[in-house]
Image (cartoon, rainbow over all chains, first blue to last red):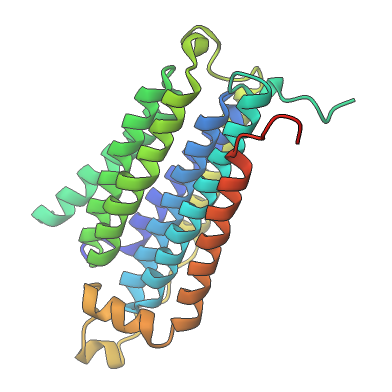
Length: 101
Length: 172
């Protein structure tokens, strides 16, 4: 390994924290989904770091499956965004109050 | 510090900066482009971690497919007043606190414990390669069942996206 695995894990934690911040703070539903992608990338980074540390391919295989599930999540999530946009134009999550009474 | 570790630290700094810019830009298209920069830098880090196939998949699937999908949706939805509205909800300091405390917590947890050194058994004779042939042999050997299940997950996602985004015929 070029750098110790701890460095990769700290980088992954910082990226995951940025993703959490974006997911919780943004008002636009598309940018919330993008923040989820940032978090998934952080997780893939730590999986690849562990894989390099233990010289074991399983971490990379797991990261591949994470990417596949992320692609599925994007498809369904953006389909939902389109369906929501058809009912109520705009992408602000604060406007989605139909289930609130 | 060797050249490769200098490259790693550049990639790490650039990915943190582009992630920060991605979650804070006002214009959604600018956010997407910063996320593209993040994905490319993370692919570079994968290369440095001996995960070549993962780096290629990162560029093709994330930067190529997923991000273009997001850009299409942003352009399809046509949000002209997005730049005039506030970027964050009024609760954003709490969100910042949560993100910061998560990163700090993981940092502390890691600095307090030493990771076990890498096992030097079979792998020492045959060093791990993250190349296409090794990953392919693993995917079609011990990981065949999860691989096929991933295809079922993707099929379900395709059907779900079509059902959700389909325009309902009038009256039905």
